[in-house]
Image 1 (spheres, rainbow, N blue to C red):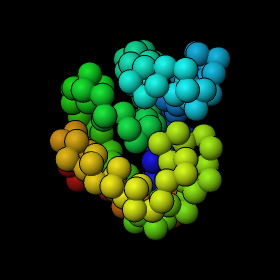
Image 2 (cartoon, rainbow, N blue to C red):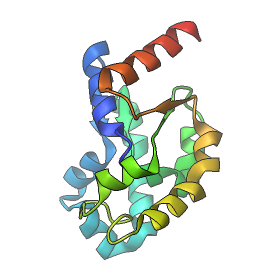
Image 3 (tube, one colour):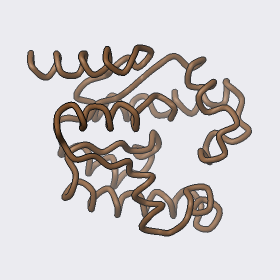
Length: 157
């Protein structure tokens, strides 16, 4: 969370004339509830089940999908994503992530968390990110630099 997935996904889709969706926004529209409200009503497991359901819908409709950072927490979602080649892992320094998500009430897994707690959450997810990522992208850069990194990698690979 807080690494720029939605921003970069939207930029990439505009530059390459591809369709784009932010999965969290898609879920909120389909459920007519905010992500924090869904977490409150059905808990994280219930949210992850909904996330998987809507992920499978979105992969049939959109070229570029920005998922939440915790999508890999649910084994069905993780296994589903493994079938796709172009999974980009946006990563940046924990200090930057912490500043971006601090006091963001729209991120249930970040509310009232210290930098150490967020770092521990990140560390608990690393192996799963590595498992599915086609490319790890440093998102401590400008949007244009990140876009160029992705396009250059794709053109070389």
